[in-house]
Image (cartoon, rainbow, N blue to C red; front, top):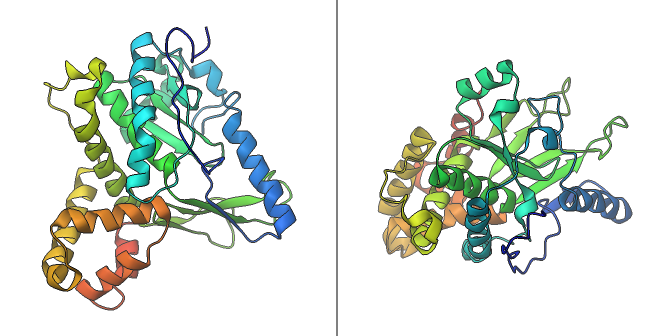
Length: 304
């Protein structure tokens, strides 16, 4: 049975984006269209994906979604577009087929240990245009992971030209949300650092929380699980984000006419969804001093 069958209707969404890639940099118009078409095809074709920490293709690790999971995901997809637009993003037409649930019993022991060590529950691949979650936890925990990765998928993403003939797409990551990829001369395919990664993850997780607060009570399959305590990730990163937002609010509330710290968070969230970081850079520099935005990027970059 196909994912969209069995009484589960596909979500109706409006979208101008045909893939998760918002911007392609460094090509002439003709070549840019070709690269854009490649990513569009990757977005449309969800079979044969390969995950980075396993040699097997995705269909060997994926399990079929249960009827209840399909109902929950359908409800989330029907609500996520409006939520993304609220924060200045351009939503994607995502379906059940874009969401892969992996059965960890099919993983090697080495990979299971790696997953346990890193504590990850899901990840998004911009190069392959898909995301997956691990079959861990109850429905509420799984749907939180789905929403987190959906928001990454819907956030601003850009790629840039890479003159390596061995790479089919000839592109590499440039931006994801507010993150900025940095490369060294020896390794030009994978970034040596990703600046603002911690801050970006904190914003995505805070958006996940807000989506849940506004929608979970409306989804019947989740209502009975809401009585349980729900824990969220990136606690240290979110704590730092909250401190920054509160400081900006207290310092600028009169001049910027902020009604609450949530107005400041909205600016940060909009930067992640739209890729426009000038306003948050200005607010951070205004609050913490010249050079503070660059310093924050260093402090919240990925740990090698």
